[in-house]
Image (cartoon, rainbow, N blue to C red; front, side, top):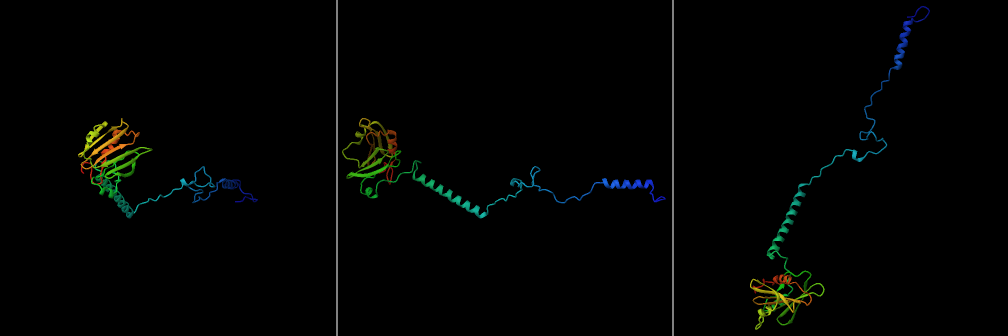
Length: 242
């Protein structure tokens, strides 16, 4: 309402100025964004330009499962292997009832053994470092098995039928530091001769006399010589059965 002369009343002018001031100081209301402004895998201290560490990215680990056919095949293979080992152990036990080392193959040929009237013996367990070197027949009916060791060490095993008119007991009675044993009827004596410089062993079975000795200077221990003599065996039977 204008007063006379075109001038607004004083109170009305005050209200207009108050409304303008209120509109000027009122803060602007902006819409809220529906999407985040940064990646949820970037930490507060990492800028948007830096790469994301692989360890911070969640991954789904797939579990691996073996199929039934693979498991069955693995079980069958395991059973076959176990059966083979058990069979080998059983065969080894029956072929070596004393649970010693497996017996060596006979160094004698079948032709030589069939040409003699007495069985031939050979050690089933050789002393450490020794091996079968040669088999010779220097005289008809006398067989010599030579064992070669390290260097010049040698062992000689001479075999023949028990000689008639010769006292083996008198011969072995002259051994020094002698040790005696009996293995299924075979008499075994081990000792020293030639002033203790040569180790010698004698085994007498029903059909064979085995006389073994080392080479001069070898100085083979009597206990080890006895162990070798006690391991003497044939291709068909043990000492004392032939």
